[in-house]
Amino acid sequence: MSISENEKLWVICFGGNVYGPVSAMEIKHGLLEYKIKSDDGLWRKGWSTWKRVQDIPLFSFQCSKSPGRDDPAPELPIPSADEFQSILTPQLSSKDVSTNVDWTKKRLAIVGASYVVAGPVGAVAAAVLTRRKATDKKSIQIEDASYIASKNQ
Image (cartoon, rainbow, N blue to C red):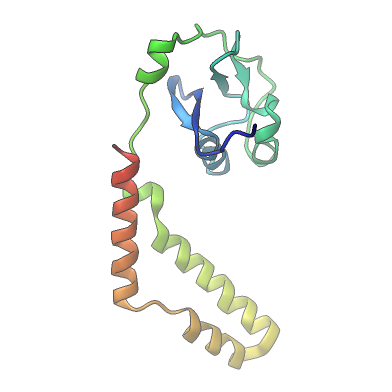
């Protein structure tokens, strides 16, 4: 039986706080954004001790990109079943989603690569094909707001 990476099975300790339950995807995202370090503490139901994120094969790729030291796993008390459901999970904000900023960077990379490969004509074509209209931006903002609202429930 495989476990979905979207299931909230993990509890993580970073920045002096304990968060969870969180999903594997949220941990991977945190590692890639340098919010979580590879030596931060990680725990899930059934484990008798906390482990470092880098010790879990599921996160090895993201840990190779994340800063971290070779500190031992933190000495924290193991959450009880009741605590597992009540540990604070931070809410998302529009900053965490920032789709428009990401798209601007991607578009610039596409246009630049097109210039290198196909010259000025290719760059112009790429710029035209990747532009977003005001209605597209508005629909993206609505999708982002909907995503944030669903995650903060």
